[in-house]
Structure formats: structure tokens, C-alpha cells
Image 1 (cartoon, helix red, strand yellow):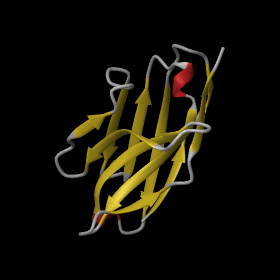
Image 2: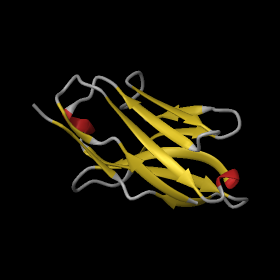
Image 3: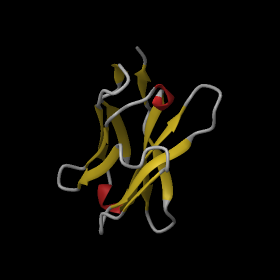
Image 4: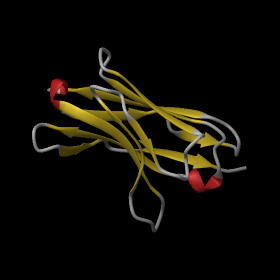
Length: 117
């Protein structure tokens, strides 16, 4: 499985962005997808996750009510809709897939999101 993110950029506080993650390869082995982020000097943290079969979602407390994760299995895509962005949301955002019977992790290359006035 290979993952490619897109949609990052520079926005002002309060604005929105939608990140996309395109999956290719053995996508039938994907059990769940997630978005992580890593700010300078900080550890990578999970932002949101969604299971492939039931569509069950989970969010970090810091983004609940502002971010929405979704997936389109037919298009092999995952999305992260980010609303009411704050400067603290500034980070490199990574797409992640958990695949196979051992739920191995696959990562995309990351996309920069900068929230600044």
C-alpha cells in the first residue's frame, strides 16, 4: 500500500482546509486509516481515525467538533476536513493506514499545514 497526501497550505485562523489521502496498491488489506500531525519540536500525534468497514471514527480532544475524517473506499481515498483552524493546528499532517492481519502501519510523505495571520 502506498499513500499520497495533498491539500495542505497556508491559511488564516478561522479558515478551513481539506486534506486528501490517495491509497494505491493492495488497498483491500486496509483495516483503518488515520491522520496524524507533527509540529516542530513535538511528537507525532493522532488527530483522527476511521475504520474501513464500519466507518467508526475517533478524534483527538483538541480537534473534536472542528475536524471530520471520512473515507471513500471505492475511490481509495481518505479525507480530513479541518474547520475553524487555529495556529496550534500548524504541523505536518501525515496519512496513515493500518493493513493486514497484524495491522502494520504505512505512512504517507506528509503535507504542511500552516495557520497564521
